[in-house]
Length: 352
Image (cartoon, rainbow, N blue to C red; front, side, top):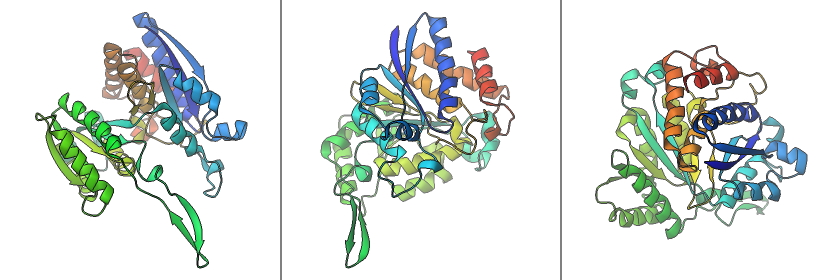
């Protein structure tokens, strides 16, 4: 297997955790006789500083021509002015749109060794193994009109929550297919008691469900879903939801495993390169100290191997190496241990 992988380390701890994941990918390549070509580009705040924009056309083109893209994190206090015309997050949104990735998969699985790191009682965490499928290209983040104005001398802001039938159908169909490969349970999360967009979401979901009679479909209002993620998270298998709801619920779900540093994500489209990144942010408070947890990014690299390169055995090997390291008590500071980024990466590499 020969593949071109674009690296977008980004800001804060992004370069540190991406570097750790590259070491793992290089080890996989050596072991399996593969050739991975890496090229590195700027995104986010560092791209604003260097180029005046959070994502250049050249970087987007390189990503579009790659087999996969591995991203670290974007943003930080330096670029946190909400009135700034250019913000780091714009680079991430433009990248998702430019790659045509519409489905963000975020697996959440509680490791037995880390039950004590979660704020929930251990009995609540038994058997938690779910995947949230978040729609990425529609909803409030992209709907028009959007902006600010003055009305009778008072400031006014508008965001528009908009979805089309096609956008809903493709994400829901992907979620049904994923559920077929798991426990055959799908929870579709919406706010159909209030929002017209959610009523369309629910209607289209019911129509798609007719093609998947082997999957049990459940409709859950978003506020109920947020409550059940804490009260009974093991009841969920696959959850599918729109952009903003998914953004919020996946951060809530991250608390179940004890640290956002553990969770990976994959953003997929209908044939182009996938985008892979840990769900955590740039963590500027610990950037440059060598203590960031690399597991989320390394597990994102495993998803890259699986979904973009078709290397299932290699993906499983990486995931098992992370699990074994945690089993043996190799823990970074966010998990109550003492290992830094490099030491944790070494522990994973040894088991790989």
